[in-house]
Length: 377
Image (cartoon, rainbow, N blue to C red; front, side):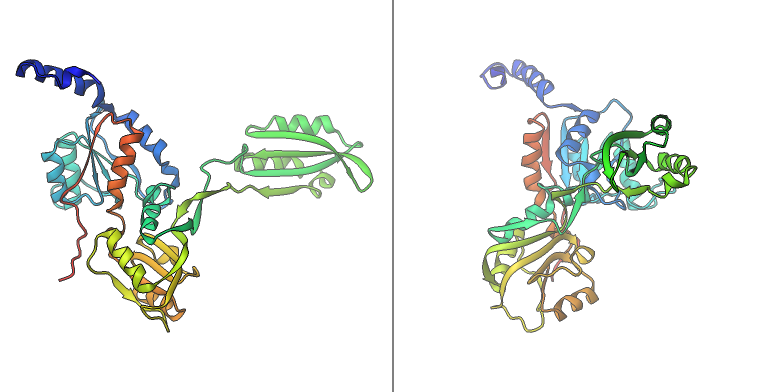
């Protein structure tokens, strides 16, 4: 750290030194910052229906001094962004979700885009990538339950296949067939990797061929093998699955180290989310004294993630009326805290984690005006 930033010197010198200090440690190129954000939590974790990543980009080059964190980007929040002179907004929820056919002053989301571009402010949204991440929103939500072990309800799959291609083709060749011709043909197809080994099949020495290939290459492989009826009849085609990631995925199934009453769990959740009120649906036959050992949770809207999961309690932001009835009929208690109330508190942890991850190269600030649109009155 430069001591010139803090030593008592004339005002003019202090101002110049301050600029030098800030220029050396308070800016990041947007592209470099986006790469670092993806290293923190890969956008590949996001659900296929989601709209994540960089949504609005000023003309390059664009440098970032201040990163602004918000759960929802509203017009009120945008005013705060401009007042605080932020260069990049990380909005947990994507402000652009449905395709825009025009960008005019007529709707509030279009106005957000216009104001961002006019003021050279980029907009980035991670949304479900942060839901799935091991250090993300759902893990933060689980911290409020007490000591427990947790795992994703719907684990994510690795972003890439562990081998080349997403199909495996296996077949055997006996010594009466032309092995060199087959191997040459297989290796001549693009996006195919081939291995061979000796195998004894039906008391006969044969060569076992195993190859991995893409969907496009698979059709060429099948086309070649089908020309030899005897060879093709012995062919096996396997569809390869990406491996599941143990600590990454949607929702969390949490098993408490020690059971607690539903009343105690309610107090813990209120304290963690800093809420005075929550909504509660008792499972059939349950009371405030009923014991809770297993909690299934999902930040935001949890109906699709929690459906069918065996637990003592469902904990989420919102669920449909009929999904609540289904859960209650099975003796499962339901706690609802409103959608963004189960997400917004994570941003404080995120600020600290990103500060460390980015080595404090930029300023990171939290919105003071962002809030859930629903209030209890």
